[in-house]
Length: 199
Image (cartoon, rainbow, N blue to C red; front, side, top):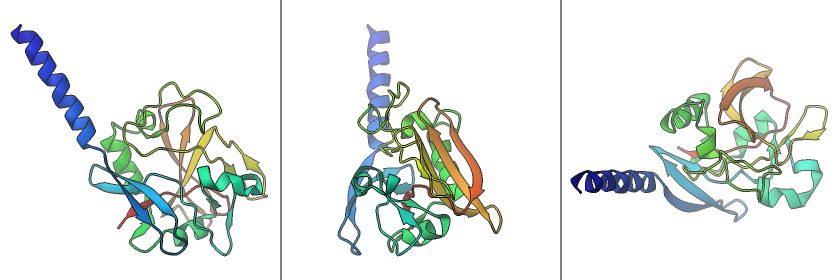
């Protein structure tokens, strides 16, 4: 009986820790009135939605269809993404993305805790997705630097504010079929999603 009680206590504590890790809220962007969900993960506070602020240039709806903005936000060039976050927020750095992944167990498994579960926005079942973190990674696809759109509903591509060199910047990729968070670099003229983190 004592062993069962001890095991039950462990489960309750684990659930409490998991639940307390998610502190949710909202933020209203005064520039356009859009309300974003937010989530605190560890010491970081993130927007729990892809950014959907329209810059004067360097941003597109996927396939140039406005109906895609509501779910997936805009796709931005790196320069546009750097400017797009509202006051008090900024485009996350490579180091901030790495810290997020580390907090969630490391880059080799963190994606399962970041991805939205189910098939509302994913074209294929994401069997390993739990969205335990509340981050709600959304597969907005990307626009390449020749203007073609790819992978809506299949892959998440996010810009980091960190530069690789004068022509390239760091990107974060999360795929439907893997638990990995992949950090790489690519030309700044591609169009990717943006996630803002609180200053």
